[in-house]
Length: 261
Image 1 (cartoon, rainbow, N blue to C red):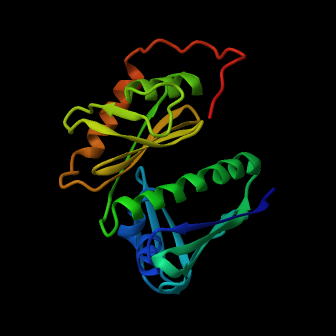
Image 2 (tube, one colour):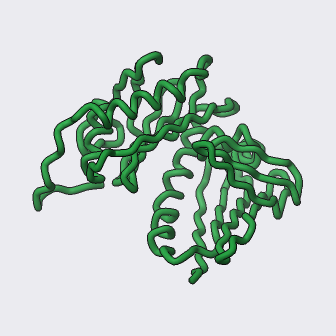
Image 3 (spheres, rainbow, N blue to C red):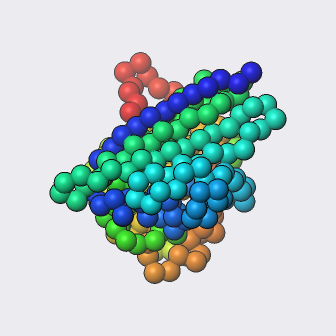
């Protein structure tokens, strides 16, 4: 049985409407802060496509008014499921922009878990958009995706492995410093800009790095702005697989006094 849902958020961004439009309604712009590799056919009735981990999803562009409104809708599945996205852009004095996002549609039998995941994810994505517009304006990011199974580890143990690999305390603290050395790439040295129960976000001089765990997997969603990113995806895939396969000690069970972000 399907279940309708709607998530609505609003944020003020430190960029003009034209910059925000480029970030939300063009393939290179979306590549720089959201997920996957994106293609946008810039017209109403065109196709918006996202490819993540070899899986391609397409939607029809239902509204395309440059600088003001961009909306898409996926096709309806056999069970009735679909998703629709709407972005409304409004310029404000001082060079800032208010962006309103409406994500709606019909979810399936496990709608509560899926809805909760979507609801938790959107504040992080909008935070990443803000980081992009603040620190990498006008630069196109290269998306990097990697994933690795957690070999039977619990969610807490996956997180412990990730924060260990990033030289961070558990839980990571926003403002803390992270360090990692993926083979074949320059060391990662950056600042923690997001930390919750599912993901850690790090900003460096040349990229926005996201380390995510869930459903028995560890995942990476990065946006890189450096001059040489051709080997990054394979290098981060090796780093992640090695991290989860190196036999790190299982973390202790949480004590009653433990807290998590």
